[in-house]
Length: 166
Image 1 (cartoon, rainbow, N blue to C red):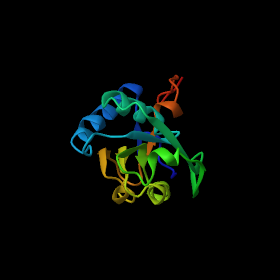
Image 2 (image 1 turned 30 degrees about the horizontal axis):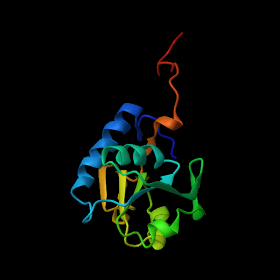
Image 3 (image 1 turned 60 degrees about the vertical axis):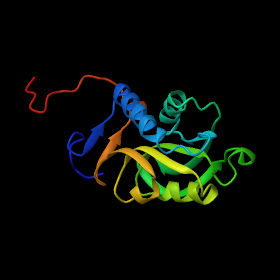
């Protein structure tokens, strides 16, 4: 990141906000379901697991699987590598499959996932401009230089005032 203070280009997402946004994603996805409904949800781990669970609950999708793609080491992005695939006998080429992630940033992770399941519908809660073309449905767009702080990455603690004299 840059020399900006954390609040200047950071977007802090609470558990409550994530839950509301994931439910909004589910409502939006209702209108995109294929004939017969969604067959399964595939969550992109780790960030997509909480939104995928909420979407699956709201849309009454009982088959949930995961794909694990490692593309970050803390806040440094690297080449994406699939380290766990979903049951390909179930997901096939992605017909009727809903892929859910928390965020699309550069889109590189989703390029890898789409290559495995090209017919799937990809949904993210948040989207940045560089990766937006990889997503079929999302809720909130943030600028490319914004860092999203998800609730699983943060903790509540006392913070000194900026101009603290004591």
